[in-house]
Length: 265
Length: 286
Image (tube, rainbow over the protein chains, first blue to last red):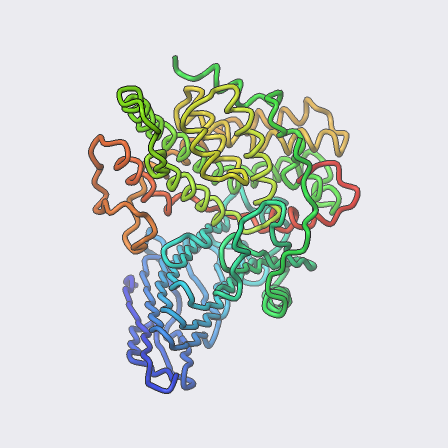
């Protein structure tokens, strides 16, 4: 078994009349891309994995004024391999001015024994819009999860919007009521764009309020976006909770109700 | 002077900066029944330290480093002002104000929950107010001007630590320490736990506290300036080269590395912080 290195790329261009054309669709097995709609691409995994030692990179470049939807046909099952290095998946996405990206692949399942690193670098232009969902399942049914670390960096015109690391399968966080509790899956959706910009004058007394449900929350960020975060017992429950949060985030763009002010002693 | 005594003052729960009013999610965890005794609390504290604790430690170390450079620049400015008695330049950039805003924005980007941002700013504002009276410095004045609504607590803590004579590692240790001691004390009060049992949990965490401070500082030392955030760093010093000794250039170079600081998130803490706001009977602010 030898480690695989692959670099796939999706790039759009404006085709006139506000339409989008896929300018580049470069597969690199096991990252195989299929166009499934005028502005939609599915990631079709060809081959098992990723396995330890594999290094996969997906570039997504959404040109100004265009829109793109990226999905995947099935879940990604991360497996242990023979190499003593982790498997790595890097997604670099740039969304241009006035462009829209919807990125919602199926979950990443961290099978027992895997060591996986997921890196997302998302650069948004000032008035770009994005919907970015990420779901991680802690092992197949009934097994202990492998080890995983996911880093997510989103910037708007170079300013930091969201920077997060998720650690899975580490002793300090496993089973901690502060981190995942007894959940077996964690997911988040970033919905960002000019429609989610915070009020012009930052004021701690008027911090926007989150929408909250059972196992999910839609959290208005300090910058122009909302992060839905959810925990679930299984992938089905996780998706259902994320959907509720996404709906809450999308249907009621952040408002500024008078917050309950904290005592200021 | 190596800052040890100042570190004790800064980390002391008797520091009049309002820290006792925050449970760090423990009150809501107790209300929801996910923390019921010492065993749950131990796992809660360990997970909190590995996530929020590490992030605040790294931010505090970064703030401490920035304050040290910033006060160097400000000292030079004061010297210039003394030699040339005219109106002081109203140039915020010379005081590091944009850099303080930038570091506070890095804290914002690592705090998705508005309830947690609110709690962090409330604590940061109170700490900054206290620190400016205890250890007055140009860096603390600049921070107060940069973020008038109150900086994030670890940013204020790091700036206060520098002004008190502490090094970044000490600032990181103080941040890690307060990330678990406040919640532990709150749990004693909320669950009626034996205080010695709970302090035993904290003693067990001592090695992890030291590790956290070490990792936080290493993340700052190992980071290289951002390469793909063109206007995100405002530095222009690439290839990881150290800039010269000029304080402003040095500070800008530091800022360009902040993008890589840890952002370990804890979804349960986010849910607990937001749920806490809905509790009409709460004893703690957060």
